[in-house]
Image (cartoon, rainbow, N blue to C red; front, side, top):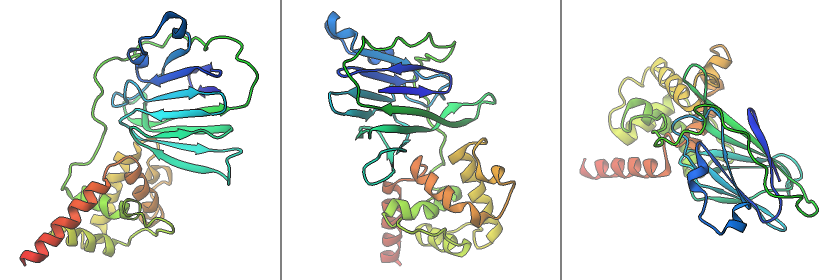
Amino acid sequence: MTLRGSGLPTAVLGSGETLLFGRSPTAALPEVEAEQQLRYTALPLPRCAPHVSRLLGELVVGEEMVRLRWRGGVEAQLSSLFDAPGGARRVTLVDAMSALLDEGENRLVVLRGRQQDDGSYGDLTLAIDVAASQESTGGPAEPAPAAAGDADASPTATAPGLAPGTREWFVALALAEPWLSGADDYPRPPSNREVYERVRHWHGYAWNLERPQRVDDAIRAIAGVAFGPKDDPFRRTGGGRVQNVRFAVGRRAAEVRLVTVDDLDAAEQAAAARDRSA
């Protein structure tokens, strides 16, 4: 198994070896007998955002499989690009999930995981190549020394988000509802009117969302938080119509958990309680 990434020393592991990676994963190395220590490698990822967990994940290489155990508080997308059984797959990883990696190239994208030069956040992409091989030629690869600031052992910061109960939070809930409710087979972006009606249903008060421009403004604000300036689809498309990108904004809001299934359940319960008391 080989792990690669921009600015990252390539790590090559064989059967029986484990790679720990994250903002500062060294502290997560297990206390084992001296002869077992060479089976573990800690790899700090360069330019991690401060809200990225010190230990993001564990790659465990077995005789016939490679398992990824996700330990991070931030979300990631796992995609199998080649030789995936039944075709390519894409999975959103959250804390405590595990996945067996397919043979070939697997792409791991840590959402909003890289800190840009201007202090904003972008996605951090890693490539994990899984291939059948002969006996391991030695111990795990020694990572190159991390650049200054990369091995940051400070407490993990809070990821950028939306304040619950605000106008933008409710609009994000309306956009992400298909993914949160499991009705995302063929979702279409909700219209401005549908967003307004959903927010009014949940909250009883919909601010000024009856005006389409106010819905558009809220979606732009959500996109800035969900994607960051570098990947903001409004900036990337040079403005454009809101309808053309709100599908991506809704899916991204669910993927990075700006709103969650629990948020949707709470909003529906609040609406039901208000209807009963009316």
